[in-house]
Length: 390
Image 1 (spheres, one colour):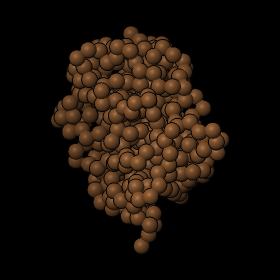
Image 2 (cartoon, helix red, strand yellow):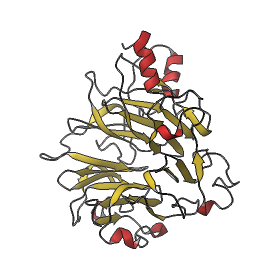
Image 3 (tube, one colour):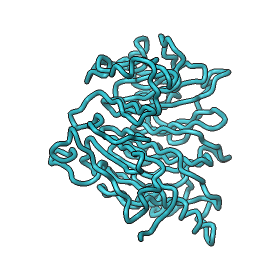
Image 4 (cartoon, helix red, strand yellow):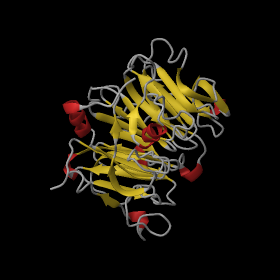
């Protein structure tokens, strides 16, 4: 079985991973910081290793109801948080109960099979995880009472590969999901989905529980990307045009309230994301278009500076500015938007038009920030280097 490293390589790799910081909801250890206390300021995440090779550079964070996935450019996947139904993936087996607790409270490596597989993207739903390998294979594990696993199974403690998916002569180019459904965009422009389709989020012909991948019919354009909220799916085409399709109910004016700029070309979209009840588009000019429910200040505040990255969580958003600042707004009861909260869990008294600036000092230099992530009342920031203070 793999053992914890020693000597110089251990020191080098630990330093390379001190770049991930987390704050917010942490009742199951999903922040990976070694405890189960909610945090309203960034805390350094802990990683435990199974071999002597550095995992490389962090490229993606995906956080579900009570577990988090962290993917590196080497294709290695780590997870933290609840593994009660297998959602955090299989880990090295040790007899010590204390080590099993440590696996839950810190990021430890996920092993899909006996032979390592390089993973290119990952997704965490409420209690399940989906990963795509560089060989274009898709594995799912965890709990899927509404069909989230896509295998026909209700739950799976071990990763299972989806059979005959994707279809021949197609590659997976994007995956998206929310609490109870998943969609996959293929290189041929088609979109498949599974999970809870009762609100039409998997198309009008798939209203109900869908347990295996099914084609979403009726798209009139070549899909490039998708995002999912709790009861909806939003699919878009080429980043330079305004091709789009909204699937689901018109709650919170998500269909009728699509901004004119999102409907009319040219729309130079840089990124796309959604909360449980809203949608956000970052364009190449640094402007955020957002619409949907705003009862907790979830939509983008006015007068934001130019933004380079956006990460949308369940009911909050993080944004990285051109100057390297991290801003947060929305529902922040668990500390996921930082401190200075109003009594109802939102930011300050004028929370509809305000944001918090999140600083990493003294843990790291703010100008070293490279990426941000957001999940179910969880927030993540990663940097290029470690820093212990002045």
